[in-house]
Amino acid sequence: MKLYEYEGKLIFSKVGIPIPKGIVTEGRVVWNGKAVVKAQLLEGGRGKRGLVKVTDDVNKTIEEMRNSGIGKFLVEEVVEHTREIYMSIMMDRSSGEPMLVSSPQGGINVEEASDIKTLIIPIERGPRGYDIFTVEKYLRVKGLESVIKGLYKIVTEYDADLAEINPLAVTDRGVIALDSKVILDDNALFRHEELLKEIGRKEESDNYVELDGDIGIIGNGAGLTMATMDMVKLMGGMPADFLDVGGGADKERVKECVLKVGNNPKVKKILINIYGGITRCDQVAEGIISAYTDVKKPIFVRLVGTNEEEGWKMLEKVGIKFYQDVESAVGDVLR
Ligand code: GDP
Ligand code: MN
Image 1: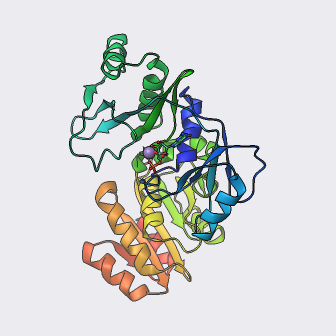
Image 2: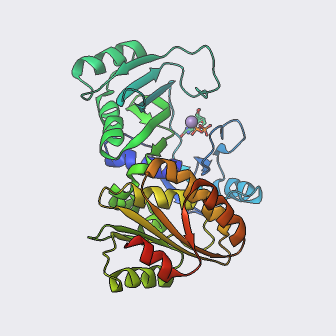
């Protein structure tokens, strides 16, 4: 799950990475003088698209960006700086070890740049004094310990695939993270309800409760999800959770939910109960299928409503069991 810049910066401040003073807003703010207004979008490259603006009139700039369809903004103090650095820690999937990547050429989009100087250090047991010294020497800047340790903490304790600062500004009061890019491992989200609550991802946290049983429960709508849990209990099973995908869930949301429930080690089987209205059954099926290869646990789906036949066909193709009535689905889960 990719986080917004302001969400990533909240995590930065929790782990001791310095960030500019700022506020998140959807409309007008009270702010005196100069500021940087930054559109909160999940895509990068905002700088080039005019979506990061230094301005003397904050509310006017917000209004202009709102007119081009942006809904959320981060308003921050302008940080005077002499240089921009790139720094990240990412989980290397092949080795399963965190790698520290740094470059004196920050600010530019690293994925797009071809000829960029980087230093890559594997840090399997955490950054040692010597690693920090090496990076400081390479980048010609001091005082990187809290930044490097903070990034490492985000990757190891919060299960991030990537914790990136681009740019990290060099200022006369030390280094400050001007941007954040944090990608949390979808497969580990179920372990971080607290964090999701803290960064304000209500939809991800309010709709999920972990319980003691072994049957993973996913439904759409709190009422239907609770009724599903009750039926499982009535027929002798024990729910492992309550998870409501919410109204109009698309394939991404459904995938996230199935991964979350399926990756809980307590869950042996997954029961999904969807009554599609605004929610489209084909989207639901697509989401389930894309999570299925990762989860590798039996999934039973009761799926009716909008585009149900399309959804059924898709599930049938990959051999996921589907039902039109809840009783048969629950019966099969508990068999
Ligand atoms: P991205 O283009 O989406 O990655 O957005 P960034 O947050 O990285 O911003 C793009 C550029 O705007 C950065 O490379 C900086 O040069 C500049 N920038 C961002 N925040 C600030 C700030 O607080 N002060 C100043 N002076 N420049 C900033
Ligand atoms: Mn950036």
